[in-house]
Amino acid sequence: MKAIEERTVGLISASSSRASLKTQLENGYPRICDYCEPTIEFLSSSELARHIRQDHTTQEGGSFLCRYGEHGVCQKLPLEGVCDVDFEAHIRRCHTSQSVPYSRSTSCFTEDNEEAASLRSIRLTSDRDTPTIEKKKFTLHR
Image (cartoon, rainbow, N blue to C red; front, side):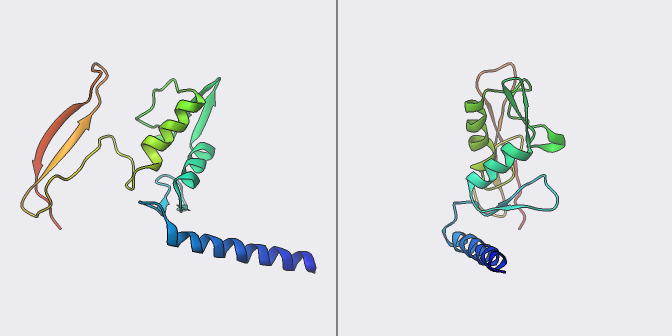
């Protein structure tokens, strides 16, 4: 009976410490996994990084392949994979630091009004070392 009580107390303290974490969240968190069903919520970038490494990563030889993307393919990482250190940097740079789901282009608003806003799209091409920056006009509807 005492073991059951200890487990119950442990569960209560774990859930209360998780609740107290919600008051000190990183920017963009809590976040959910964009590809898992049912939905999983993460309170920090380290929780999300751990999830991506455990559930959306394969290892072939010494290379790590990121599967955090549509159809299990990450568009930001080479198909042949990368070493462990580079993979950790990839997860931080491409998946945990953004507050919105990953997309193939990085976009930002330079004007915030309903008539027009400028969208800057950065496209990476395989034949160039530097990204191509395009400016496009579009209407922002709220």
